[in-house]
Image (cartoon, rainbow, N blue to C red):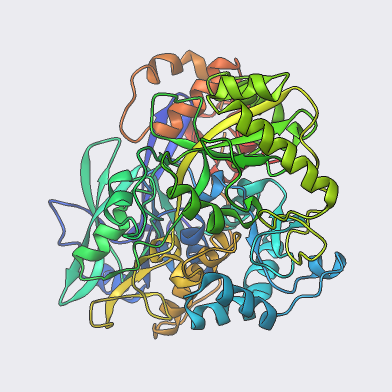
Length: 608
């Protein structure tokens, strides 16, 4: 295989040895140094011009889905990502996916249908894109459930989510990492899918009004390269971690809060939006931001703007006056507008010892309840704790008489079986029929303050039904596609999300974009034979001083530093993550990324 013209012409591999971690930078077909963009001439050039080449910017769930769909047909795919690890924000998420009429629903005795789901989507979303909603509800069983389970994803239960008349929120084993990892592993089995890590796309290259590749910066080397392609798919995610953009596109009818925390992916800062705009793409409905009321400062970075989504749905929420003000179980659609109308835009969660085990922090790295207790529940800077409601109110800075009255009233409503104040529970409820909501009467009592938390973009780069980026006239820009949250999930959510309707549309749009590229190509494709990456090593510390390598933060090394800081803290053996590198063999001293995916759970347990 290594002597084939295809391999000689198109794949150049650079290996960087870093503390026993060898970063394989596979520069795909068409990669050239910025100062030499002419390429080679002759027969190789003719061969290259016939080979379909696709560059995908972003290795999150939408980019991976597109890569696998293309890679299975033999297309040469290069996936470029700013990080050194796959998954984007999805790998850190709760991982739930809304899917319609599945075997798991049947097993649970739930009767669902595309028509029923369509009605729920359109009613709850208010102004959702009817065409995309119809496609999603009609195909989610095949395009999501069947596809994912065939890849090895296992769904363990179905949860309730506001707006759904039938439970559809499918929770995978392993949360977000359990959802994304099987897609990535499948990609690694194809030699024609290459990953280029620690590289940020900075510009789209165009010729004769067609996008023909990207210019990108190698973050670890401060160098620029160009990667040519027949098609470029932007899969860079949303912009909710860019608080300046959040403010710029904040809904005009709502007051921007004095304090707001960033709760999206580390690289969800709008890079793809700027790239698409520079190429003539249009941004639409950018004020449709799906933000949460559950934000608390990340205890690991208490002085920063980053937040976590934390909640106890068995407790209640009160405003700074110590009063209930919204139906907690109608989630952000009901709570956020009411919260933003408060004089002080903040709330308090109130719960007791009996419901303490129901406290949840969203994300695959927060499944360990002992960790949650240590860093959050037992952290007096985040959670107040007292044996009486009066003392709890004093610690939280809430009016004691109001909070006592609120708790007494709530407990009375629980006894009556009907929430006459906000309709949270009762026998006439068809959604979230929470007749078993517990009273708050078991000391000690807890109070946790929350602020608005940015989360997901429901507006973004305009695309057509084939995920081709369109300009202000609605005309597709040749060679350019956008998928996932970058597109605002193609309007499937409208103004309000049903929850579980972010990761699903990411997968769907990734596959739609790939099929569009295949449909418009005249070149025949062959199913590629899966190949594995070479492996092997030992005695890492003799050559690599990890402590000194992570002492000073470096551009492009964020995940490397975070992972290896934990290695040092827990005194882990290198081979716990890199077993494939032993015994040491100088000729094959490189990371097996397929094997490495099995070690992610060392940090991201992904279990309830």
